[in-house]
Image (cartoon, rainbow, N blue to C red; front, side, top):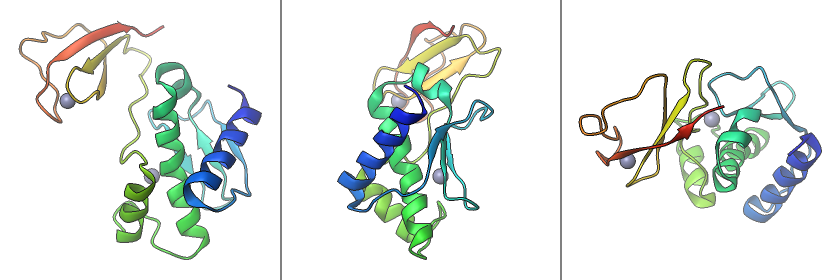
Amino acid sequence: MNDEQLQRLVCQVSQEKFGCAFKHHALFNKRLRTTGGRYLLVNHNIEINPKMIMEHDRSTIIGIIKHELCHYHLHLTGQGYHHRDQAFKQLLQKVGGLRYTPPAPRETEKLRYRCSNCGQEYFRSRRINTNRYVCSKCRGKLVLIRKVK
Ligand SMILES: [Zn+2]
Ligand SMILES: [Zn+2]
Protein backbone atom coordinates (compact mmCIF):
# COMPACT_ATOMS: atom_id res chain seq x y z
CA MET A 1 0.00 0.00 0.00
CA ASN A 2 1.33 3.45 -0.88
CA ASP A 3 0.33 6.96 0.23
CA GLU A 4 -2.18 7.30 -2.58
CA GLN A 5 -3.96 4.05 -1.71
CA LEU A 6 -3.95 5.00 1.96
CA GLN A 7 -5.51 8.36 1.10
CA ARG A 8 -8.24 6.62 -0.89
CA LEU A 9 -8.93 4.15 1.91
CA VAL A 10 -9.21 6.92 4.53
CA CYS A 11 -11.58 8.90 2.28
CA GLN A 12 -13.69 5.81 1.74
CA VAL A 13 -13.92 4.89 5.44
CA SER A 14 -14.73 8.51 6.28
CA GLN A 15 -17.57 8.65 3.79
CA GLU A 16 -19.01 5.24 4.61
CA LYS A 17 -18.70 5.23 8.39
CA PHE A 18 -18.85 8.90 9.32
CA GLY A 19 -20.96 10.23 6.45
CA CYS A 20 -18.47 13.08 6.09
CA ALA A 21 -15.66 13.72 3.65
CA PHE A 22 -12.01 13.55 4.68
CA LYS A 23 -10.54 16.69 3.13
CA HIS A 24 -6.94 16.54 4.30
CA HIS A 25 -4.00 14.23 3.78
CA ALA A 26 -3.37 10.70 4.94
CA LEU A 27 0.20 9.49 4.63
CA PHE A 28 2.69 7.00 5.95
CA ASN A 29 5.28 8.19 8.40
CA LYS A 30 8.29 5.92 8.90
CA ARG A 31 9.42 7.87 11.92
CA LEU A 32 6.45 6.80 14.02
CA ARG A 33 7.94 4.23 16.35
CA THR A 34 5.61 2.39 18.66
CA THR A 35 2.42 4.23 17.77
CA GLY A 36 0.23 2.91 14.98
CA GLY A 37 -1.14 6.20 13.81
CA ARG A 38 -1.76 9.80 14.80
CA TYR A 39 -3.91 12.77 13.99
CA LEU A 40 -2.11 16.09 13.72
CA LEU A 41 -3.99 19.03 15.22
CA VAL A 42 -1.86 21.57 13.35
CA ASN A 43 -2.60 20.51 9.77
CA HIS A 44 -5.43 17.95 10.21
CA ASN A 45 -3.41 15.21 8.54
CA ILE A 46 -3.53 11.57 9.54
CA GLU A 47 -0.26 9.67 9.70
CA ILE A 48 -0.03 5.91 9.76
CA ASN A 49 2.96 3.83 10.80
CA PRO A 50 3.97 1.75 7.73
CA LYS A 51 4.93 -1.12 10.05
CA MET A 52 1.24 -1.55 10.80
CA ILE A 53 0.57 -2.49 7.21
CA MET A 54 3.24 -5.15 7.29
CA GLU A 55 2.39 -6.60 10.65
CA HIS A 56 -1.38 -6.49 10.87
CA ASP A 57 -4.33 -7.46 8.75
CA ARG A 58 -6.64 -5.11 6.89
CA SER A 59 -9.36 -5.01 9.53
CA THR A 60 -6.79 -3.78 12.07
CA ILE A 61 -5.62 -1.06 9.68
CA ILE A 62 -9.21 0.07 9.19
CA GLY A 63 -9.70 0.03 12.96
CA ILE A 64 -6.71 2.38 13.31
CA ILE A 65 -8.03 4.63 10.54
CA LYS A 66 -11.44 4.83 12.23
CA HIS A 67 -9.75 5.77 15.50
CA GLU A 68 -7.81 8.60 13.85
CA LEU A 69 -10.90 9.75 11.95
CA CYS A 70 -12.75 10.08 15.28
CA HIS A 71 -10.09 12.58 16.39
CA TYR A 72 -10.33 14.28 13.01
CA HIS A 73 -14.08 14.78 12.71
CA LEU A 74 -14.61 15.70 16.37
CA HIS A 75 -11.77 18.20 16.31
CA LEU A 76 -13.01 19.87 13.13
CA THR A 77 -16.56 20.14 14.45
CA GLY A 78 -15.44 21.54 17.79
CA GLN A 79 -16.37 18.51 19.91
CA GLY A 80 -14.38 16.62 22.52
CA TYR A 81 -11.68 14.84 20.55
CA HIS A 82 -9.49 13.54 23.38
CA HIS A 83 -9.50 9.87 24.38
CA ARG A 84 -11.10 10.78 27.71
CA ASP A 85 -13.97 12.77 26.16
CA GLN A 86 -17.43 11.23 26.12
CA ALA A 87 -18.00 12.33 22.49
CA PHE A 88 -14.84 10.51 21.46
CA LYS A 89 -15.76 7.30 23.25
CA GLN A 90 -19.26 7.30 21.80
CA LEU A 91 -18.19 7.98 18.23
CA LEU A 92 -15.45 5.38 18.44
CA GLN A 93 -17.93 2.79 19.60
CA LYS A 94 -20.44 3.75 16.95
CA VAL A 95 -18.02 3.31 14.05
CA GLY A 96 -16.24 0.32 15.59
CA GLY A 97 -12.79 1.88 15.79
CA LEU A 98 -9.94 0.46 17.84
CA ARG A 99 -9.71 1.83 21.36
CA TYR A 100 -5.94 1.44 21.38
CA THR A 101 -3.68 0.99 18.43
CA PRO A 102 -1.98 -2.38 18.41
CA PRO A 103 1.73 -2.29 19.16
CA ALA A 104 4.39 -2.00 16.52
CA PRO A 105 7.47 -4.08 17.25
CA ARG A 106 10.64 -2.40 18.49
CA GLU A 107 13.91 -3.22 16.76
CA THR A 108 14.80 -5.96 19.22
CA GLU A 109 11.39 -7.57 19.31
CA LYS A 110 11.50 -10.37 16.80
CA LEU A 111 8.79 -12.65 18.12
CA ARG A 112 5.09 -12.17 17.77
CA TYR A 113 2.53 -13.82 20.03
CA ARG A 114 -1.20 -13.71 19.71
CA CYS A 115 -3.87 -14.41 22.31
CA SER A 116 -5.85 -17.44 21.17
CA ASN A 117 -8.94 -16.03 22.87
CA CYS A 118 -9.17 -12.28 22.13
CA GLY A 119 -6.59 -11.87 19.37
CA GLN A 120 -4.47 -9.26 21.17
CA GLU A 121 -0.91 -9.33 19.86
CA TYR A 122 2.32 -9.03 21.77
CA PHE A 123 5.85 -8.51 20.54
CA ARG A 124 8.75 -9.91 22.51
CA SER A 125 12.49 -10.10 22.03
CA ARG A 126 12.80 -13.51 23.72
CA ARG A 127 10.72 -16.62 23.84
CA ILE A 128 8.28 -16.69 26.72
CA ASN A 129 6.89 -19.65 28.60
CA THR A 130 3.29 -19.68 27.38
CA ASN A 131 2.30 -22.02 30.18
CA ARG A 132 3.13 -19.30 32.67
CA TYR A 133 2.46 -16.07 30.79
CA VAL A 134 -1.07 -15.40 29.59
CA CYS A 135 -2.88 -12.53 27.86
CA SER A 136 -3.00 -9.49 30.13
CA LYS A 137 -6.42 -8.50 28.78
CA CYS A 138 -8.37 -11.75 29.06
CA ARG A 139 -5.99 -14.34 30.57
CA GLY A 140 -6.18 -16.36 27.33
CA LYS A 141 -3.39 -18.61 26.12
CA LEU A 142 -0.67 -17.00 24.00
CA VAL A 143 0.46 -18.63 20.80
CA LEU A 144 3.69 -17.88 18.95
CA ILE A 145 2.69 -16.67 15.48
CA ARG A 146 5.98 -16.07 13.77
CA LYS A 147 9.17 -14.17 13.75
CA VAL A 148 8.96 -10.55 12.78
CA LYS A 149 11.31 -9.82 9.92
ZN1 LIG B 1 -5.97 8.51 19.54
ZN1 LIG C 1 -6.68 -12.21 25.29
